[in-house]
Length: 386
Ligand SMILES: Nc1ncnc2c1ncn2[C@@H]1O[C@H](COP(=O)(O)OP(=O)(O)O)[C@@H](O)[C@H]1O
Ligand SMILES: [Mg+2]
Image (cartoon, rainbow, N blue to C red; front, side, top):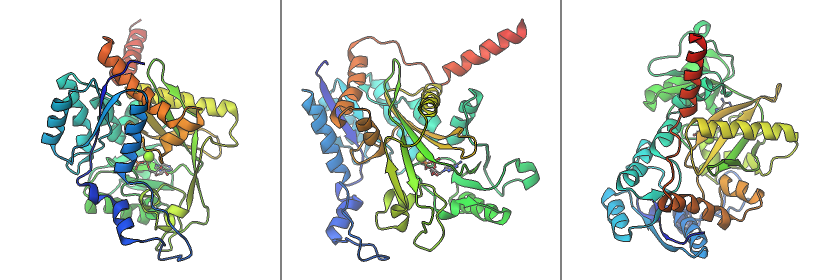
């Protein structure tokens, strides 16, 4: 592999704002609801980035890693000073706004700097879940049926055309934001209350979808020509799980389950990779659907596709495509990488290699998102014209 000057960029307002750092400082070790449990706080973001930097360095690259501290001048200054062959872009938000995630690579594009990961349009499309789903559905990929409620209440049940139970999610959030035990609704009054909570209280359009009760499977993807699916990952849920308020957990990845190791939600789920007890043909089918989703949304380098399996038909449904999943050693993507036989370091180096290749070889631009959709439309029009 060609060696290069690599700049790893990440964003945290201040390093000592890291919640893990705060827990360590507090010395908090046990949750209130079970003092016998001992919690080992995970790594801070800075530690995770340092591990990634070591992996890149091991491949012989010259590495600088930099926290832009949520400041555009810092971003511009460091890119200009280091003038890297490629940026490893690990920035997921800017100025407390997920939407700004999209504009960070736009800066690299305008500057002509190669970078790892997804381009602005793929990031923007995936972040707007309803838009992504419309494109996936138009490409005949399976997504749960759903509607968006922009303001007011959901239409009357007769017009809704959806079967309960339903799940109500913020339409443009990420990382289980706004998702808790109350997100799954089984009656009209629960639906109305939950939609109000998202639309009125959180001031965000609500995505109301049919709730797929079955197993939750994630498929990590790596690469471009062609993209490859990694072994499947499953998140398993305790059927008797309850949250800190004593509400039954409906078997979903809630915000607390993801981010709060002191919560009951956190203890009610467990990951497995590779997935067990799925026929090889079904595994291949799920991976094929994930790769198609990645292509339809114009993804490149790496992404993770979240899915659920309908328990009756075993049909996989795409919940979302994550075009900028966390690459930290403790996260799902790393687990999938290891299950594929790669070391963590090899995967990180592979990803850096994609950007370096673009920096050195004059590569044809990646297909724009939905190019395949446009091709499909053209084919349809030609067919109907005949
Ligand atoms: N239609 C659905 N059916 C079943 N579970 C869902 C559905 N939509 C979301 N979930 C649950 O909520 C979690 C978060 O939803 P997701 O769409 O992946 O958004 P994000 O991860 O960006 O917050 C999923 O991992 C899954 O557990
Ligand atoms: Mg998700």
